[in-house]
Length: 143
Image (cartoon, rainbow, N blue to C red; front, side, top):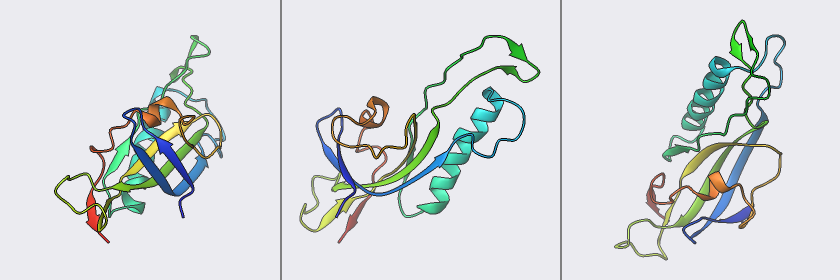
């Protein structure tokens, strides 16, 4: 049983099998969100996904970055990522058309950021997430 189905911009449907969410800035004791910190958050999320799901290729959806205050502090201007970091494992039909669709599936892992802790679903999922090309981050496997 999947957690949800997401319809990609290409029209293909993928099933969310596992989802991990965390607060992007939870536990931040001092300082403020800036480019350097956010770059570490983004690369850290990708490394976390690669360690947790080594059986599947990981695709990172580049996050949108907002600049609510252009005044530069000691670390540069304030730069804010969406507040929830997500790692999901998706399942779908095999990428390779030569494989038997009954016996084969594909499994990409995807890391992305979103503004709310909602499970992405259907055509209402974030556009950046729906824009991934299923063929790129997926690896076929036999059931």
